[in-house]
Image (tube, rainbow over all chains, first blue to last red; front, side):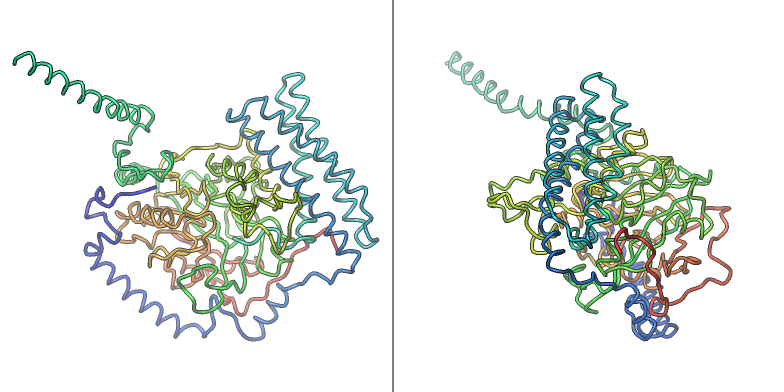
Length: 202
Length: 405
């Protein structure tokens, strides 16, 4: 990571230690920037670029801004109850996915991968039972069923991976993946609706 | 007397040997485990991982090596745009204007033989970006490429600057391309899934957070990922990386990697995330260095300001800035102008000179493209009469994206 300044030829030094070397070009570049900025200000209307104003901007903001409809008390209760299950499912599928990646890179052995998959399988089974015990309001029945379908996909994916530990055939990993991917796609879509702030922007 | 003198001399030799041999062994050990050309490795700061360290000498040798390779063409396209982001949340040292719009840029590099390398792949999770009310202008990367005259089927390699879901989001759209990602990036996700809480009593929690005292899942929004050390890696993204791995379409690398003649991957560990990486590209205007979120802000690189701090060690971000300065130091005076930022607010304007040749992607939902540099013989992809509708006057739409009504 570190690029020691003392090891950079002065002709190539552009950091603080080499400012004098770049003084000429830097001055030129700064003057060029100033000229470009002045030109841009003259050429474009104020507010162009990163700042928006006017009717079109308002229309764009309105188009981009679509708030989640207010939830009923029953909906809120259901979504709150699903949240801890969602966390368990997410962590398990992440551990299992990474375990498979590290198995292929030989950073974990079959024993550790098996432990991860067995744990995930137990979590999925538990999650399914917990979700089936929830009473979704009619308005969220479709999402409830969709989430259950996702958990079943994760279960099937984990079961497929488990076969590798019986017969030693690594192609079970490949066979298992589409179901894991489909499950992840589903919970991401539902999660994006139920918990819109789950993953903050970076 | 002589006997005493000999004994003293022998004692001194033993003491010298005792002091010197371990150091000698250490030096041999360093050389034995090091890279083939890391003669400067003894200058490695103690806080940096060996595989993440590159000396200035190594970087300059990479410049010389890259300059022997073919010259590439390069563009950026805007995958989507964050709207009205509090400026200080992005750049703590810059406060005006109070909010900014941030593009999410993807690099497209075309070799003279027609093969295309992507640097990052943009957003995929549309429900998130639109329903969280922070973004506009998303348009699928394959469609963007087609609209600017590039064939998405020619993408053979994808280098992700890091694995966050706004930069690694459309991996599955390029099933034949080989993904390049740092092992360190994957290791950190795995580590933080079991983030140790014995030292903080759960104040800093793991992904999708659990209260370690009660076992209860907490939040969001009170305890969302924003407070945890690692966030931005939904299972969906990790599954896509797994899919690439299982299909033998992933190279999980550890540090510097010569991707192809004229293209070098450089580690920038903790420049944004633990396994962040840069891509150096040989072009007619010298070396370009794509930096994803390690180079979130080009003005940050220019003016030496941190930006978009996540799992970032700010020193490492500055050192990654220095890498760009070193790698571009022979680039016809372009220097930091050749550092390509992911979220620079002034992108697609003359204020960020290398992106000034921009245009709205045709039917691209207000997303923009910029032609950075052309290889000899490559015709421009900028239309004869480019649409350059200012952001303030372009109305984007929200594409269909949800299973929920």
